[in-house]
Amino acid sequence: MVGRDVVVEVRAELMNQFFRHTDVERFYGLVDARNISSVCSYRKLGFTHAATWHRHKQNPTTGEIIDL
Image (cartoon, rainbow, N blue to C red; front, side, top):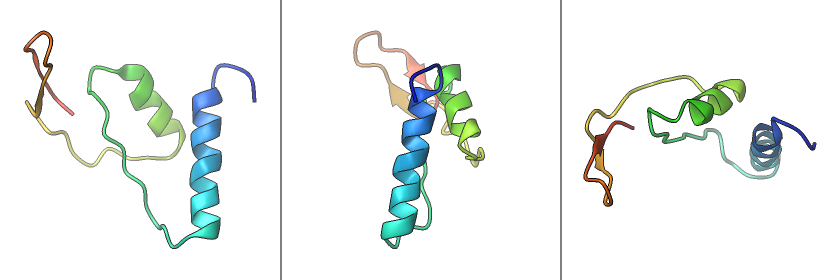
């Protein structure tokens, strides 16, 4: 499991454990729209883009308004 896609592999295994051993049927992820690496890792896991929350959050340090 060591390599470039470790995060994706670990997330996939955790999700599979939840699906197998609990009543969980769905997961969702909130990703900063500018974080392309996170967007890509969720896509690799089979997530689909359902919506963008425009101007949803403000960075407390810089004051920048960001989309999720």
